[in-house]
Image 1 (cartoon, one colour):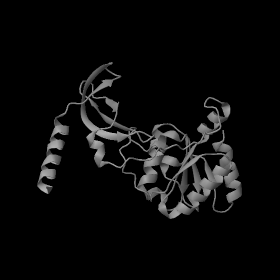
Image 2 (cartoon, rainbow, N blue to C red; image 1 turned 135 degrees about the vertical axis):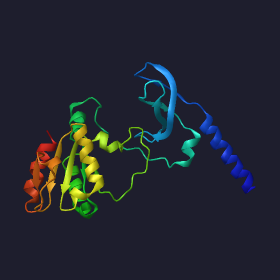
Image 3 (cartoon, rainbow, N blue to C red; image 1 turned 180 degrees about the horizontal axis):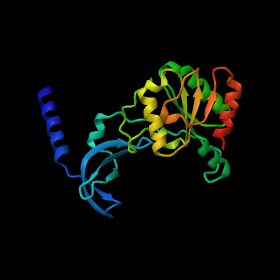
Image 4 (cartoon, rainbow, N blue to C red; image 1 turned 90 degrees about the vertical axis):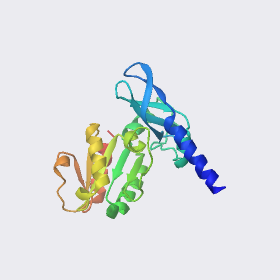
Length: 221
């Protein structure tokens, strides 16, 4: 029985490899074969496939479940901003979306990151905390965690550990590429790396209330 199941799985894998996947390419404005098809998930936890257009090399997508998704864990939907009770196109909803903030810290500063997130939430600012303690092994359709895309602003919790922390560096590099605002919550006397030296700084270790109030004003603009 086990040998039969093993053979069947091998047969299914072969069929998956041989199957030709096609997708519409917006660059070519035509449907072409998809190279390197990869099972992915949207921010809402829906299945799809991402690959390369065989004609132009651009990225193409198709929605739908495939046998390749059977081996993957389906993620929960990611929604940083909770706009329930607000009209989608209302001014209040737009303000809330524009204030959505990604907070990134080293694992050693996770307690502070969580406190900052909680305090910002009480002022109506939606947040997502990334302290590196939970590995993100999901193949997202957008190639990055949806929260990075949904958040309009980034707060880097800056301590002596920050400049050497890989996931923190990846976050600020992404925001810099997207030209989205970056702010620094200073914890202690540490000089930010060159990439962040021009970003606004807010002293949080000696006068949290004052630094927090100034940060809220910036994030709310």
